[in-house]
Length: 113
Length: 111
Image 1 (cartoon, rainbow over the protein chains, first blue to last red):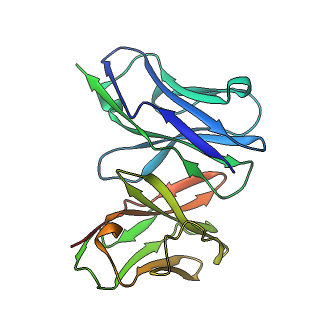
Image 2: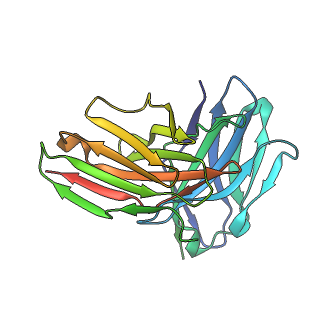
């Protein structure tokens, strides 16, 4: 069965600083990997996804993530944080193109001026 | 398209009462998921449907929970009887091209 571990339930950065949110996965078959963002009182929105092909994936709002099979990781980065990036971020995995998506416990990102 | 629509937005009820949460899918999406979000356990997949058929309900906590999808665009999640530990935000989501579209959720409080 697949699973996702997000290291750090809270991350705080200054505006303009690098954002790094960590995600490690476990899957018995080649995984599909996702990052979702949740703003207060809203549902989740897709930031980016990795299915096959290029391991560096670019998403919306300047975020990107790199699939590293050897490290079973899919960390999310953004070179320069903006105040509007403050939200909760969820990493998720599915076993290939199956419907079942398993989410991590989330990382709350705070951005200070 | 209005997106995935959930109702009610907030529900406050007393222990023992029946609660019904509703979800309207995006037209053309054929998979429907119900998730529960709590501080302690994060996002948990309760059940999902494909083409109106329940595929995996292993996440449904107990028999008090039931979900139906009477047609391709609508689903309900029922809790009967409700308990305080059911208090959470319940999300439904529909899927197309590996992407989930979430509703805004129903905040359920069971007193």
